[in-house]
Amino acid sequence: MSKKTSYSYIGITFIILVFGIIFVPKIIDRVSQDDITRDESRSKNVATSDNISANLGKSDVVYLEINDELRKVPEFSFTNQNGEIITNEDYLGKVYVVEFFFTTCPTICLPMNQNLVEVQNEFKDFEDFGVASFSIMPKVDTPEVLKAYADKHGVVNPNWNLMTGDFDDIFKLANVGFNIFVGDVEDAFGFEHSGDFALVDKKGFLRSRKDDFGNPKIFYRGFIPEADGVDEDGYVQEITILKEDIAKLLKE
Image 1: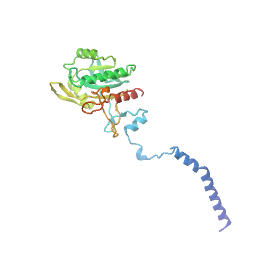
Image 2: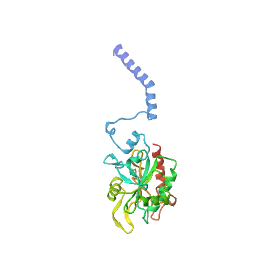
Image 3: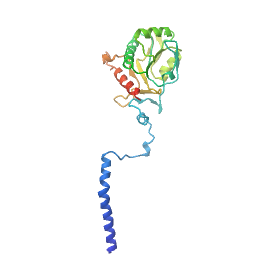
């Protein structure tokens, strides 16, 4: 082996030694601090509600998605208990809860609205909180009837509108717009309907939290009082988590 070759090997060995002394500890430190991440092209365009929430700086109250599109409140226009025309645009900038009910309901409607009054009182200091209550018996629930019902049951939030209008429009809004079940057959007790609440953020998007399996809950069980905890059928109240999620959305 020539002297020139020996000098080359010595030079290469020296360079490797210097690299190890200077750079390897820095690399190890960055890895230990989670400072190195992998950027793979296959993960760049995955549109999950968690990714959307992170990108928009939102809370962990997830967006509801259908066919990869965020579900937004459809346009509506109805008359409230004060004879005023209320549309979806009147709720922009507000976090609000949605229900479908009727004033003569002998079963779940009264506890639903008692629960909403409790929620109303919890957020009485927030001008950007409201409730949208849609009557599914508009022929009975005129603005005057809704006004009397509101006064009787403690509705004081100026952003709580009890609304009436064309039944077909309300039926479509419930079943298609919010996916909240309302039956189209009337019986002795009125129309069959769900006791669920929907939650809407300030920009009009439907929001919820995830269940134990990582899926959006979509709705909040509205007919069991918070104080009861569990009803006779074993269903757990969800007014507590509804309040928690309203509080999160109000901070967005």
